[in-house]
Image (tube, rainbow, N blue to C red):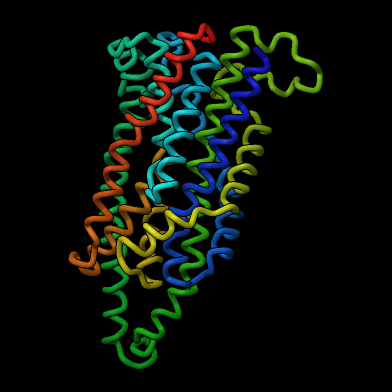
Amino acid sequence: MLTLVLVVIFAALVFEFINGFHDTANSIATVVATKVLSPGQAVMLAAGMNLIGALTGTAVAKTIASGLVDTNVVEVTSQVILCALLGGIAWNLITWWKGLPSSSSHALIGGLCGAALAAAHNDWGALIWSETVGDWTKNKGVLWKVVLPMISSPIAGFLLGIAVMLLLWALISVMSRAGGVLARMARPRWVNTFFGKAQILSAAYMGYAHGHNDAQKTMGIIALTLFGAEASGALDDLPGWLAFLHPGNSEQDIALWIIITCAIVMALGTASGGWKIIKTLGHKMVKLHPINGFAAETSSATILTVAAHFGMPVSTTHSISTAIMGVGFAKNPRALKFSVVERIIWAWILTIPAAGGIAYGLLRLLEALGWA
């Protein structure tokens, strides 16, 4: 059993690494597309900020560890979590190969829901309407922590992208009418120069927000794994050098070693980059200038940071993609390439059921082989 627990932790860190290079492309696409930073510079900036962001909160980790699957209904074994991770990893690799900016967050959540449903023997009612999963008043479970932000965060990203872009244009318009130095600063050359520098700050903010929200999801998975292993007795005879694996009193106790390990692994994954997705987001969807990139990154990072504060595992992919769409729409509704947007939206729609289906099938296979 201990070997299986270690395998699950390893799979979780593999997922975190893949999340790093998969979703980093989403977080730095705009700063690369506007040529403010080279791909190498952008990746290093994102890796450093991911590390800082991952070390500064655990609200999302606690949601994943104890707010999605009701352990009174489903026995969350190491096999269940392993299948959930493999479902998320498989879908991430498929969409990365196709260059589609799908959500690692929703791939993980989809895998967890699919594996939990298989473990509950298709008891949809018990899984959806159980105390921790269906009770909106407790702000817990799939409805509050997944469904609501899944619908609201793309809308918020789109609208905030439009709002920030219009606000910046209004400010530039006021400056141009003021005359003197302000009017000169409102000229296109000065605007591009200023926002070229400002976009470095917004890209850093985006990298921080990505780490702050996304890295915590794997922290929660590892905490959930260790708590389940402790409850089953798998950690009773740990050798001294593995004593750190003992969890706290509940799934919500996220050990410091889990936080640091996940932060470092995500930063390493980030450093490996993901150029196919950068090409889709930064070049194919709409042409971006530094002011557009600044607006999109600031809008998306704000949504991610606020969501992380409330423990909502919001998708970096959804927030930055829709922020770029909003900025592009504000710039010129006809400038958006809707064929690319359509491909992205289909990837979003398919992510949870696809990852969930893979995880469901894997757990059923383990049960048929007598391994679960």
